[in-house]
Image 1 (cartoon, rainbow, N blue to C red):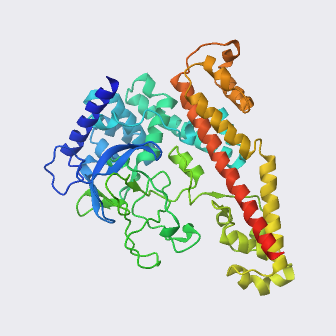
Image 2 (cartoon, one colour):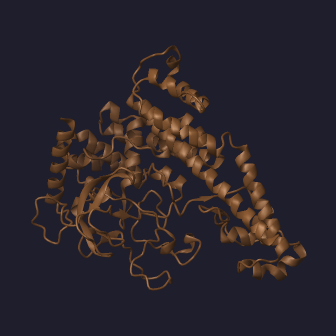
Length: 493
């Protein structure tokens, strides 16, 4: 019955979207907004619910248009007089805070909101890093990741407190004044908004936000370091307002100019958000969008998911202060690629640092060009990197193999329904599982309680799993770097 009701609700949503002019068809007189180019489908191993190709699609063709009148923006929401008057009394709030509060206000309206069909299809919960509890935060293990989580959590709480007076003035229901409600709305804004040129908060785009993510790969850039691309993207998710997306179409050469995104943008001449096929698709394939170049930690922070293979993932290792001062490379360019290979800048800087000070000036041009300075220098550099990586792995609480076993145990736990069943899987990775139970006040499992696992506990478990997945990928990059350095050393010895 619930699935049947969901199907009816979804059908109503697509009809509502079509009435607003949202369409994947060149003709507007259609009963549903989808069906000509796109169709809703479920992709269990690639993002869950998303949009698939309803026919063969050609790279670069328009596949969806969402008119400006159908975009949920601060501008459109402030047409509500009560909301507008209240917001104007709080000029110190950022655009993102205002859009977040406006979203909660629309939720409070219930059936009287014109956006109700859209709001009903928003996720009920998110796993962005700001929603992590203390246990899930510490499960990340890596200091930089824990710091990022603490910063995100602190920022979310501060923004909620700043906006609280506005929400009280709007007479919102008590449950919508809570930090939990704010985190949900903030996560919706962070993970679903699209860039618009007139408001840095972006817009919520019905139907257009159903596309799942495709990471920009090596084929999208002529350079090893994607950050060297011009930051002039016309389409991006707005959680990283200064981020870049390197998914271009019709690129003839890498000059960084006049390159249109295949994914989409707001087009003023047609007053609509237009989405394009970023590649050719055959009928039934999932149609994806690139909405930025992100590491896995950034994806987790802003969107609440990770990629098994993220070509833009990277790991930063501790470096001596002299390494930074001996070169002119930016600090953020010193990292280990997802493949385990040190970045161009990191290798260049280390080669120069490993050179005697009195020879650095004469060899600097070779180092900056990426040249190997000498066999001895290269071996020393590789040994130094491998040693740093080995120290990192040894100082982390768990090994790669232990993390893999733990993930298997978490998968088993997620299929269970009661604490009594949970006792049967408390084996190799039991210590961290017991810690999870204690963090969630579930110690009763020791006495054989048959207490059902609540939705809240399962949500916490999902975030815990993401933390373990993240740290496992982090360690894998470090291990691959050691292997890379060892291969170079052996080839030169």
